[in-house]
Every structure is written in structure tokens, then in C-alpha cells.
Length: 64
Image 1 (tube, rainbow, N blue to C red):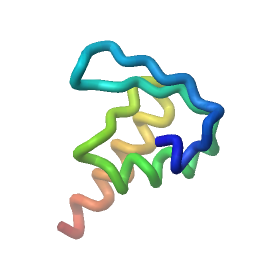
Image 2 (cartoon, one colour):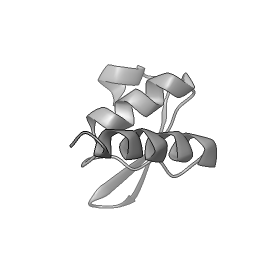
Image 3 (tube, one colour):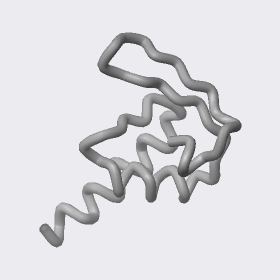
Image 4 (tube, helix red, strand yellow):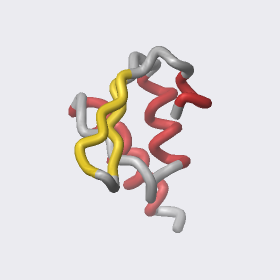
């Protein structure tokens, strides 16, 4: 994530298998990142970003 967002991120390790990041980013950028790494990341907040990711997945589902 540092390669993508730089060093200005907050990193929390809630357990030995997971990391939690807090970043300030563009909405479209984070939606695109979520699409690229669907199997590796989970956006937990804010809900409007989660809704955008869900909507983009519903649109993609029509084609695949």
C-alpha cells in the first residue's frame, strides 16, 4: 500500500493475518483500486464508497 499511497497512511495490524489502512484519497481512485484487488482488500468505511464498489460490481456482473 505504501507503493500506491506513499508514506502518509495510517497502518493498524488488528491481528497477525490482516492490516488496516487509513488513507485520504479520491473517491474514483479508491473504487478503481477496490476493483483491481477485489480478492485482497475490503473497504470498511465510508458507506458511499462501499456502495459505489457494489454498484460497479453489479454493472460488471451483467457482462460476465
